[in-house]
Amino acid sequence: MPNWEGIEDAATMLPRIWLTRAKDGDVWKPLRKIDCKALNESRGEEILIEGDRATADPKNGTIRFNFVNRPGMKLMPATWFTKEEKKNQKEFILHPLPEADSWQVELLYQNAVRASSSLGEGLEDVLKEEIILESDSQYKICVVRNGGLLSMRKRPRKTNFLGFGEVQFTLQRGYGQYTIEGEDDENALGDLTHAVFVIHGIGEAMWSKAEVSTLCMCDELDQLRVTVNRKKVVAWREDCKKCEKQKQPLPPPPNRIEFIPIEWYDKVRSPSHALVTSLTAVTLSSIPALRSIANDVIFDVLMYLTPEYCEAILQCVTTQIVELYSTFQRINPSFIDRGGKFSLIGHSLGSVIAWDILSILKDNLEKNIPKGNKNDPIQIDGPASPTRMHSLATLDTRSAEIPMGYQALAKGAANDSNHGTWGPCLPKKMLQTIPFTPDLSVFLGSPIGLFLTLRGAHPVFDEMRAIAEAERASLIPCDNEEAEPPRVFDISPIICSPFSLPTAALYNVFHPSDPVAYRIEPLLLPEGVDNHEFPPPLFLSPDGKSVRLHVKARQVGDQLFKQFGSLSAMFDKSVENAAIAAAAADAEAARKMPNTGADGKEKTERPNFSGCIKGRECLFRLGGGGTPGDL
Image 1 (cartoon, rainbow, N blue to C red):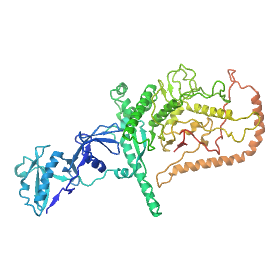
Image 2: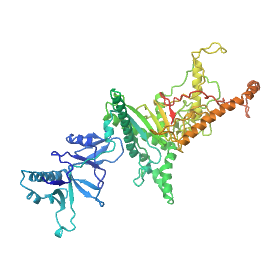
Image 3: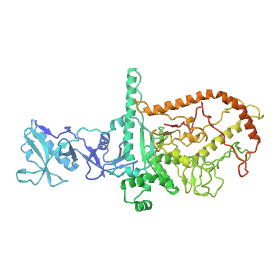
Image 4: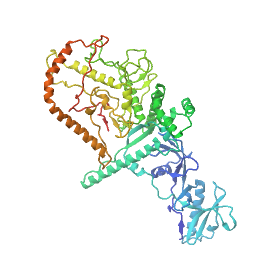
């Protein structure tokens, strides 16, 4: 029996390989093997592929994405391919033949196999047979023998004199061995138990351009999914090896995590949008590269600082999350029953959007329930607190009695430093919210600390701490004001603001050298706490690697600062003791004297919180049920 060229799959029943491409002219690429098998068994019905992230329609030859705003892909099956060699002749491109042509080619190939077998009648008649391609009538298919090697060839029907300059191609049966990155790892994982909605930050309009080499968010998430799955599988296999050595039962495979991108840039940056048209008109033509950065990157921040566009972006993101949440539930109807959880990730400006979405959810969940009642109002002893504000800022300032934490005044009281908010500044109250409480909320490279500072959130958080102190004090039974409270009650001062968002846990992850990343915890501590007293962030490092030298140096510096601080305190102890009596006398005299300002009105001194967190563990409840951290 002669040898064949281009026969990658010699199976009698040749399986179909399903291929896809975005547009005409692109190279056809095979789907994952598990998806090809499912399509071959589907009998033409629509099926879910790519881990339920896409839906394949074999009848219409299309693929549509379930969670990503991408154009549909073309889909086709193939068993025979035209082999086009590149110039270096080491690589080649496979072009699939349509099914109608593949069937004819397969029949000719089977005839040649039977004719060349031991009981066959020889190849003379088969070598004379030709097949005219239905998809391209200018070419024909025939069996060619070159010495002892047979091959299926695609040749032009009209040949030149003696065949000079004739272009012909070798046909290949089967696609051959191939691997899709991440397929084996994802197949090894267990059920899907966690879905994460990821909100992009600034510059996505630039990264999504075809001429820019930087990956867009959808491509980045594809790589992130592959990386996460690989790490989970590697750790699981290591655990399996340890259990085998210890003769213990093998652990079950880890569950799968799905990352769903939330894109908002194209909704508010449509080329037909009046804002984009005006921006293009006023942009100078000089230094186009730098102006593109300003228009496509920096302009996103300026838009979000504008109430109208801030509302449009929040509405766009919330609507997408609601729609994708519904789609996800339809595709995975038993997800919630199996204990599935939903989370949020925000990158850069996307983390501010995530924070504001959680603020809106907080407002709708709490329904603005006031503290105390008319018969038993809560009185706060201490400095004058800022006006109670809401988590969402609006332009409507007609109501003077605004519930705490909701509305910052965008106009009418711009010079009033007592007004502050932790939420967005919107033209009107936003009623639509996300349909779930996140299990995790992760901020990556987040400037939320900067935004909260601009919004004046620190005094609001301080007021919440003061209210919590007053509430606790009102619960301590003590008939005699001079008597000590019962020991069962915790009388240590509340240091961290009790402010929290509706999420089980919240993490602010940043690189120490990120110029636009800011911390959040200092804003939850009382105003007046020294910077060196802030709890240090938790430094993370890659697997098998230690913290970098400059990070270690900073940690050592912080430790030395604290040590020298305590050492100097020892030397200053005598001076401090000597000054106690004088300080006590001055305080008593100041207490008896009226504290008035230049206008004759009584002023309230702000308490000094310097040193209040020394030696104490700070528990931030920013993430509701969990303890957040700066990482």
